[in-house]
Length: 406
Image 1 (cartoon, rainbow, N blue to C red):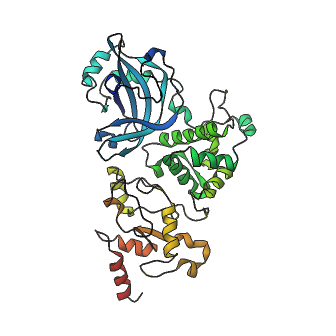
Image 2: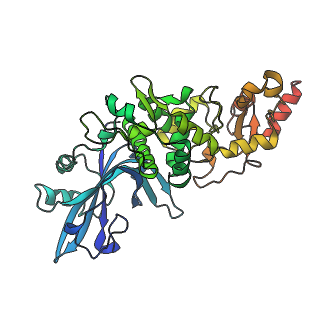
Image 3: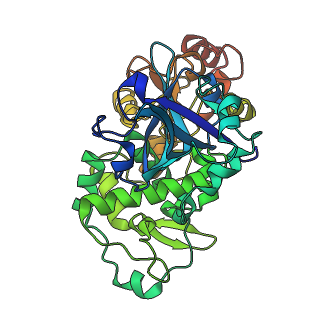
């Protein structure tokens, strides 16, 4: 998919508030000084289903407010659409990495704006694609330099990096436990479970189901910014001293290898029981598996039903997997195979966890019960269960193994 651009309109007059938090609505827009730092946040709220196909794309937030009896329109924020949640009323809460403009930009007098406003149905359409209108180029030209791409890892400033004293394990733990969003914790879990806790931006983007590596870069930069803010540790700067290289809070960056997670950060995740602490096995064996077989993955990706990450959009807590195995033991509940007895303790994570109710059949707000909803299966039995549609029941699987003398 090519890069695309969208807008969302915020009618401040109708809503009685600005989109940014803790801003006095009685204040004139011209008097505002907004926090323009890059962050991962919720940016818009819409009924438009089109956001489902806009993951990974750019969005401009435009605010309309009447001041001195004149309806004024301001370019307020810019972000990359990276995730969404659907509430019980079917409305979308849209998340992404972006920033507010320190001084929102008045659009009224810019060339082609009136025609652009007509194109957008006087902004009554709300969330929509704007690539076909020439004013889209104007909006892009208004992005400050450096923009979000400044979070891309570039050649490191070796002197600054050598002086960089990264946070302690305790400081990492405090930030993770008290300040990171569930989405940000997921990203750290994904990186942790790659071999040697190391991955390139492209590998991370594929695991997180982003359209391009830019989304992964931005997330790493935003995570680094959070560790800087809450640990008080100064990060190194880019060459020339223009801006902080926040991504070094996550790990050292090497070409063709990617980020290599710092030992202190890895230990913090382990101490908080957010990962298993054993990364010697294959990257894919230690997650809570989704109910998608390899031949189905492309279809599910395209429809946006499942995000294939180690703790995914449906089940955000890997503890469910561990609780399931703790209850049933490290034994396949279909054929009775015991990994630990047969291979020893070093490969006990090879057991997989099966959702008794397929993830494809349950809603986004489903809360998994690790005892009644999950069950351990060996890879063979797990594959057999999903060899039919609908999937075989556990009772049918046990009958099959019994009939064949297993």
